[in-house]
Length: 114
Length: 353
Image 1 (cartoon, rainbow over the protein chains, first blue to last red):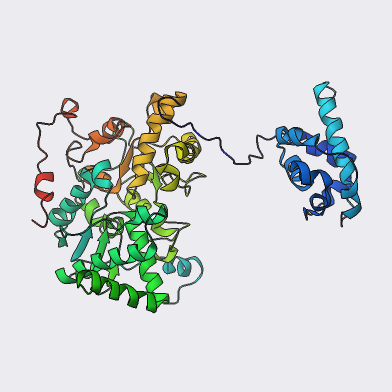
Image 2: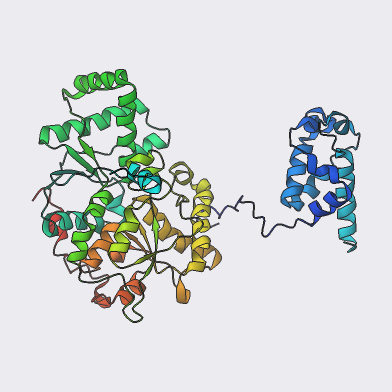
């Protein structure tokens, strides 16, 4: 950096071969309705937290499916679990449960249970 | 004959390239990056292929870099380009051959704009008349210099002293071709093979004995891209693009890279040095870099020109591994010997000799 005045920017490519999809598979198994999500963004539109923190449940779903788990972990605790997203979902996805399951999975993963 | 399927599609992406009487316009930046390339082009065209190539001392920058960096307004750029056309018209030529990919892209874009918006052309003609008193005819044929070399690739192959073949193993050299983005990505029908399957460099390599490598990031930009390079703090994005390409091509063990743009050889060459300085990583074989060439340099090597007269000593990634593989006769101790005056560059650096 001192020598050149810049560093090499990290790539933004999504590499499904190297990303860890275990979290997504865990949630698919426990909450099959997750597969029905069409990423319309109704959940994010109604989210109270989104107004204050920039949290987006739609984005969270995409990150989980891609296996970008570090970003999921960073954003997960912003959810207040109010469940309004579940009420507006046109596909009947139990969105609240997805957040609960993701938290659950991270806890188990930290404790080496899964 | 009725062409069908792939043949019909391929036919859509062939372009007309003039036969003779070229009006050659140099690039602003190539003279500094790889000074031997344009001189080699002139020597090949005039002495090997016996073609008429004219260049004018009053030709200026096309302002493409300024235009793509949002510094020069489009009408100013168009008027400057109109002046280049006017100089060409005054010299009595109709076949424009730019050395630079960005100039080629810009000329194509401007001619297309004028085609769709004749009122803009009228306005530019008026502006040029008011500013310089000049009038112009639009070029009859517009081809990049690499198109011209592509057209005469077989003639060059017939005169070749060397082939792109590993002398020791007899295997063809594995070559990565990198096409400048402004060649065909903006106007696919204006490039040989279009944007998806550009054949301009691949055709040369196959004709001269090499083998083209098809790797995942083959169509990726080299990272020049003007804006991400001009500001120092943004150069991380530029180098990330080149790194992406190197990592993608590395498993295929390429012997060399061939390019047809002023910026691409510069960045693919220099960034290899920077990546090595920052991360200690080299992408070539035996701990070396991957040598990067312009198409004129490769044509010159094939024709048996001296590597140091072609200016290969200006490359930051050493070219010697490829020279050794081909079996080029060169003297390593003369690499930086400034007392050796290149026999052809002196002559061809004079305009229109």
